[in-house]
Length: 298
Image (cartoon, rainbow, N blue to C red; front, side):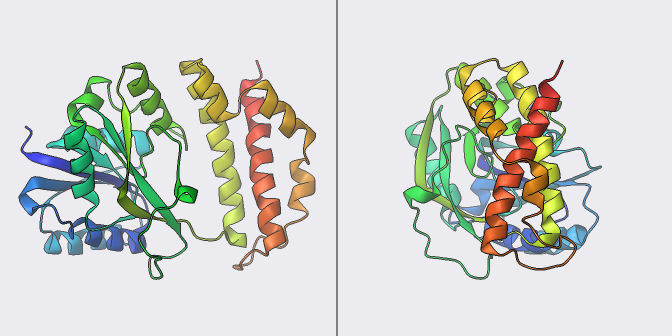
């Protein structure tokens, strides 16, 4: 049943502190309460997320649908959200994205002008939701992704028609790029509305985060191989780095062992120095491309 103009859909996993702020923003929209809903999938969180959701339910001004599931990954969670949605258009955000009050209004405005199109919104990276810069989108905030679930909307029936998200993308990365490619190949166009704006939480990495970030890079490499095997197209080869130029370039760069030595104690809860952050960026790329080669091997 479709009885709302728009659905705001997000999934969450163990981000209770962020989620409280995000849900507050979700219920402070300029769109009339009866015209939208919030569909939240709790993907097996083990922190204080349940208490955050309970408090949000008491404050909710629009329809609030919560689905609790065992941890199954983002693609599965998105599909559960799509199945429960009742809006003509569905907008996806993450649990680290803080939408501005006119966020849904701007997605609807752009969608009304191009009813069949994807609407891509702007995201401003911030290190904290407590210290927000002016809500002005700049070209430096631009993402070229065709379908980036940090801030994107699409007609609900359109994403249902292509089968939603591919749940075989069980590890981190590329499940939204896969959806974007299938939508593009189906002839769906995209428009960009920088006024559909949100803040995206991107804290500076700390020493304790390094190993998790490296594991995430390796997982992303494995799903990159999955993506190009499903879509052997120049767009996916370019996006993933699975092409001779990028693979050759990274083969010539420093290897993981030497880059690791440029980062100090990883056990401490400390901020990384600027030189360590540079080394970390190079190390993440090295780990990604090393794992690509392993995943591509016969």
